[in-house]
Length: 116
Picture 1 (cartoon, one colour):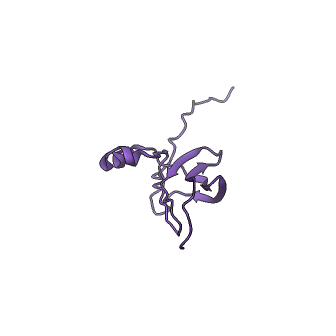
Picture 2 (cartoon, helix red, strand yellow; picture 1 turned 30 degrees about the vertical axis):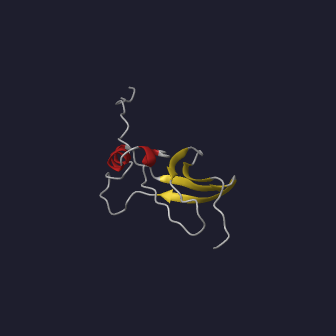
Picture 3 (cartoon, one colour; picture 1 turned 30 degrees about the horizontal axis):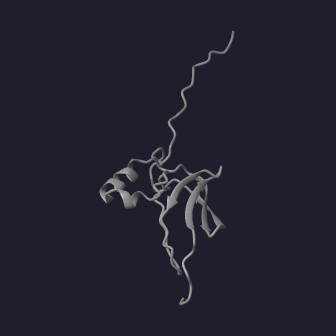
């Protein structure tokens, strides 16, 4: 790919169904095919790797809440041109019931007595 120049601006984010950014992923600004990995945790973390020790970055990532199951959008923006793809996150079917990554606690209900 000789002769290609890096992009002026480059950004890769994961957004929830409402368009809120839940993760910003690091990307290489050079021509070619690249792979990005999302740890399924909510949190931007843009640029932190350059500022903090790697062991602290790992601890912070583990402390972030897991992304709940649902529909997401992966958005790549290169020089203000946006490309996106849908992404569906599901609970692990091999885990026992009730141990999903984002199981919500049961809602508390008040006992209601039927009127006489």
